[in-house]
Structures are given as C-alpha cells and as structure tokens.
Amino acid sequence: MNRTTILYAVLLALALVAPFGVYPVFLMKVLCFAIFACAFNLLLGFTGLLSFGHASFFGVAGYVTGNMLRDYGWPVEFAILAGVAAAAILGTVFGWLAIRRTGIYFAMVTLALAQMVYFVCVQAEWFTGGENGLQGVPRGALLGVIDLNNDLSLYYFILAVFIAAFWFIHRTVTSPFGQVLKAVRENEPRAISLGYNVDRYKLMSFVLSATVAGLGGALKCIVFQLTSLTDVHWYTSGEVVLMTLLGGMGTILGPVVGAGTIVTLQNYLASGAFASSVPIVLGFIFVVCVMAFRRGIVGEIHAFVKRSF
Amino acid sequence: MTELIGISPQLLFAQVLVGLINGAFYAVLSLGLAVIFGLLNIINFSHGAMYMVGAFCSWLGMQYLGINYWAALILAPVVVGVIGLLIERTLLRRIQHEDHLYSLLLTFGLALMLEGIFVELFGVSGQRYPVPDLLNGGINLGFMFLPIYRAWVVAAAVVVCFTVWYLIERTKLGAYLRAGTENQALVQAFGINVPMMRNLTYGFGVGLAAFAGVLAAPIYSVAPHMGSSIIIVVFAVVVIGGMGSVLGAIITGLGLGVIEGLTRVFYAEISNTVIFIVMAIVLLLRPAGLFGRQS
Image: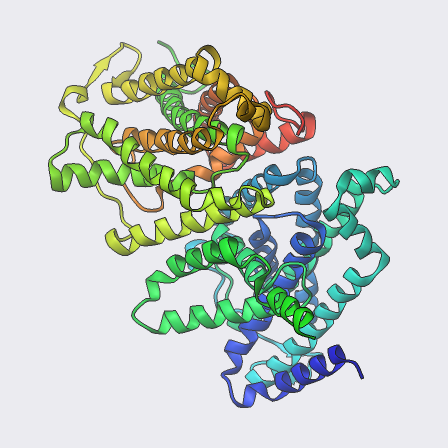
C-alpha cells in the first residue's frame, strides 16, 4: 500500500467513528460544505476559473429540494436529484454566459448573475419563504426504510454521498478530461492551438462544478431542514472561495480541510462573545492567505513533505 | 400635462430623476474602478467598502468633530485616499506579480473586514445624515418637484466625471497614466516613477469612491452594507460598458441608472434585476462590452 491509500483509509476510519465523539449535525455541516468546496475547487483549482456566484447553485438546489420534500411530498432521493438538476440547469445558463469573458470579468459576471438570482429569491416568497427562509423541511426516510430524522443515520447517508462526490471529483480531475482542464488553466492559448475546444471544456467544468455544488446545498437543506437567503447570498460565495483558498486550491483534499477549518471556526466564534465578528475574521484570513499562504494548508503540507522526504 | 400611456408624468419624471441619481453613483464608482483597473490591472473589490467608509467619514466628522458637508466633500476622499495609498503600499504592491485573481481575493477580504468592523462599531441600521442647508428644499418645475440636493448630486457627479476624463485624456499626467496602461516597463524606462504612479492611482480611485459616499450620505442612510449592495451592480455596469474608456464608463453608468428608473415605472417587479438582465444580453451580443476592447 502506498502512502495515499493509507491516508485515505485512516481518514475514512476517522469519519466512521467521528459521530460518537463529535456532534453529528456539526459533522454533517462540514461534509455539506466540503462537497460544496470540492465542487468549487474543480472550477477554480483545476480549470483556473474564479466564480463568485457559486452560492446560487448551492442555495437554489436547497430551495428546490426543500420544496419537493415539504410541499410535494417527494421521496428524499428524488428531492435531492431535483435540487441537483436545478443547479445543473442554472449552471449551464451561468456558464454559457460567463465563459464569454475571462479572468476578472468572469468573476464579476458570475457575481452579478448570482446577485440576480438572490433578488429573484427575495421576491419569490411562494418558493423561498422570503426573509424567513424555507422552514420545516421534513427529512424523510431513505428508500422509504431508513428514518433520516435519526442524526446518526443521516450522518452515514451524507458521508456516503460525500465519498461518492469526492470520488467523482477525484476521478474527473485525474481523467484525460481533467488533464485538458489543467492545460486550459495553465495556458489557454496553447490548449486552443492544440485543437481543444476550450470553451466547451470550460462550460463542462462549470456545469459539473455547479451540479456538485447543488448536491452540497440539497444535503444542507435536509440536515438543517432549512434553506434561507443566506445560502444564495454573495457572502456564501465568498465563504466557499475562502475554504478552497485556505485549504489549498488545486489540491484534492484542500477544500475538505478548508471547509472543516472554516466551519469549525464559525461554530467556535458563534458560540462566544464574538459572534458578529465572523466576517472580520474571515476577511482577515483572506488577507493572510493571499499575502503569505497562497498554497493553502494542504499545499503547504505537500511542499513540506516534498522538501523533507 | 395629460397622462401618458396610463402613467402620470410626475411619476415618470420622478423615477427618471431617481434613476439619474443612481446612475451618477454608478458612473463615479465605475470610473474609479476603471482608473484603477487601467494601471494596476486589478478589480478593486473593496471599492464598495471605500464608498461606505467615505460616507461614514462624513457622518463621523459631522457627529464628533462638527465638520460640515462641504468640508467633508474634500476631507473624506483625502482620508480614504490615504487609506488606499497605505493598502497599495503595504499589501497590493507585494502581490502585483502574482496572478491577478489574488489581488481580487485580497481586496474582497479587505471589504469583508471593513464592513465587519463598521457593523461591529455602528450596527447594521443606517445613520441619518442631514441635507446641507444650502441645498435644502426644492424647485417646482411645473411638471415635477425637483429636490435641490438631488439635482446637485447629479451635477456634481457629472462635473467630477468630466474633470477626471479631462485629466486622463487631455493632460500630461493623464498621458503618463495612459502610457503606463499600455506598457509599464517602457514608461519606467523613460524615467517615470511607475510604482509611485500606481500608488497614487489607487489612492485617487478609492478617493473617488469616497467622494461618491459623501454625496450619497444625505440620500441613502449611512450604513455598513451600503457598499456591498451597490458595488455588485457597479460590477455589472462595468461588464456592460467595458473598462476601455472613461467616457464609456460615464455614459453606461448614467444610462443604466435611467433604465433602472424607467423599469420601476413600467415593470417594477424586475427593477432590481434589470441591470443584470441587460448585462446578460450584452454578453450575448457584444461579449467585450459596449465600449470595451476584447481582452
């Protein structure tokens, strides 16, 4: 066995026993945001596109899943699929518009489109519950048998989905398709001159990223039985950027570590006297990461391991 | 005047005026963004936060130091400009050779921090800033009532925009600036201090944002989140107009403000989103923006 396999085996073992030592809802929140950040990293880390609008996929998928579960009585699996499909459709529209511009403009276009989605969500109270959010979403039962109201059952379900999503992203990045994405990131004109239809690759990467981000949002809605305007707000888009940056963009485990760190930090701060200072702390971490820590936690560890062994 | 397709002219003109005012802010803010982008090649995500800090500077000055509106109009941009100089000197300069996305992330982080700090100090609710005595009241134009302060905002913004346009397009300093935009290494080889120029440009750009903030203070309430809500719209304006030309930024800003105002009259439901819709259409038809060059 090589080192990577051992590492993943240890992490899996830890994840399996974790809910017996740590509050499961907290762990599930970490996993949902880890899925979200991994999806985001596919776009930023492996394709080199900075989207500032990923919260819309996360939030809209949550709203759709929540509505399906609460008002239409769909089974939980189909409700999740509906949310993910909504994110995929929205991602196709966003991506199709946004890849017409590159670099900083790309970030601005995605941010602006996401703000539009936010305003629509504010107005569409029948669908989103407006300021109150979509509350009281039932968790349902998996395959009609396993009651997800039990935190432990839900945790293992979400862990399984997370592993599937993680594997999917990993598989995508290591595939020939993923290699092309990296080529686009490193040198777009070169990739064009080699005959790749760069726009199509970018769009596919964008849609995949949006879809998986939607999966994170759909699960988050089930865990908290709530999706609110915060989930579609630009602030959430900023959070996922930070998770990826802090963990290490372009590394496969980085976003997971970043999501874990940020969610832990938020929970820690929210319980203390500094609840309102979370944005200040996150902003500060942004500045520190950019100034001194551009490889992120996992990236630094990689570099350290390479240097020492 | 008679009614025009079921809409009273009072309402129509009032909304056009509101649109012009919003447009004036879009124009000044996108102008600052364009100036900074031209030379430093970064999108200043903290532009909205600087606008907010400018508004707070004038409010704090009035509240605690008795500084009146007219002094604030000069002082707030200077204070914020100096903050900008420090940010450029201590942070942005160090990462200027990295990928441009990092400077975007850095300024985003700064915006979060600034907004968070002001929420911590003053809460989320807005502070009222009185209209200066000289500009109080309004004129009845017959077809509508024109509040003097609002007319002043539009006039001041237009004057500032054209002054900046003149500075950049018609003076020697502006010529250096434009040359620096094209080829910094060459300009530096001619003995011009490019790092200082970048420094001053950033300070000037955020100073413009603060100027807009002071203008905005008596119209909108002075609140920590005032910047983030306007800056995203301004980003859309910048995408629509393209950052290639100063004049383009001014025209796009004012024009979109008016479009937004008119939407409020004819189809109010989409007045919040109309600018983003226009952006999507422009992206489809002219991906480089109305006045932009394809990057």
